[in-house]
Length: 311
Image (tube, rainbow, N blue to C red; front, top):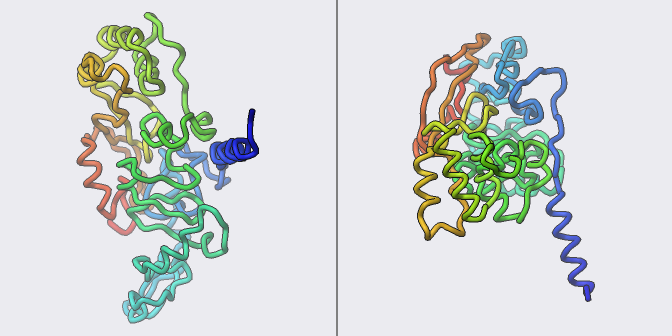
C-alpha cells in the first residue's frame, strides 16, 4: 500500500528528474554547428569559440564601441571605469567584472540555479568557468573531474555517456541526455565498433554481453577509438578510448559487476578557432591526456580557443 509520504517522495523525484529536462535555444540568428542548442548570449564575443564555424566570435570588432583610456579599467561588457575603482572590493562595473573574486558575489549568485533575479541575467562567468545559461557558473575543473555540475545539468548535454554523475545521481538518463544522446541498439555479433563501445558506456551489461563486446572490439575497433564525432565540452574537442585498456578491465573477474570507467583515455583538439576577426582552421590533432586536460583547466585560455585580446 502506498502511503502519502511514499507518493510525495515519488513526485519529488519525478520533478527533480524532469526539471530542466530539455535544451532550449537561447540565441537566434547565428548558425552555430556543434553548439546550436548550447549557445547563449554570454558566449557571443567572449573571446572563445563555441561554434565549429567560429560564428559566435566573428565581426566582434564591430561591437566594440568603447575603447577605455590608459587610466581606465575596461569591464567585460565594454564599460569603462577609473582604474583606481577596479579590485577595490566594491563592484563598479555593471556586470561586476572588476570584482569577480569577491566571495559575497558568489553567495549572491548561489541561487541563480533555482531563482531568476535580474542580477543573474547580467552575470558573466570567469574565463575558467562554464556558464550554465542562467547566471550560475561552474569551474571547468569540477566538470572535468565529475565533481559538480550545473543545477540545470546544461553542462552534460553532450557528454552524458562519459559523465559518472548522471546515473549515480539520478538513477536513469535525464531528458536532456535523451535529447542529445545517440542510444546504442542492443548488442549483437553484428554490432559495429561505435555501437559496441556505446553499449558499454550506456549500460552495465552482463558478463555474457561483455565477452561479446570484447570480440567485437578486437575485430572492429582500432586500439585508439574515437567514440563520437560530435564535440566534447567545446568545439573541435574529441574523446578517444583505448581498446586494450577496456579489454583488460572487462577480463578482470573482480570487475564482473562493475561498468567500464567512462573517463576517456585521450582527447584531441582540431577544427576552427578565432583570433580577432580571423577564423583559423587547425588541421592537425593536438592530443591531451585526461591529466593534462585537468591541468589546462586552470589557465585563462581554457576552454581551448584564442581570445581576441591575445593577439
